[in-house]
Amino acid sequence: VDRTAAEGIDPTVLSNIGLLE
Image (tube, rainbow, N blue to C red; front, top):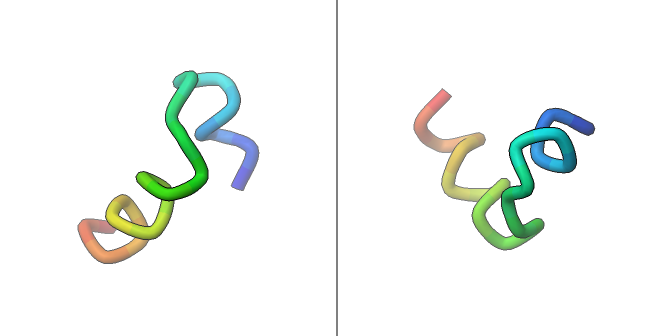
């Protein structure tokens, strides 16, 4: 998910996003 790079979100936050999504 390169979306985090565009959003400027940290890889660690990606885990949280995955849970939210």
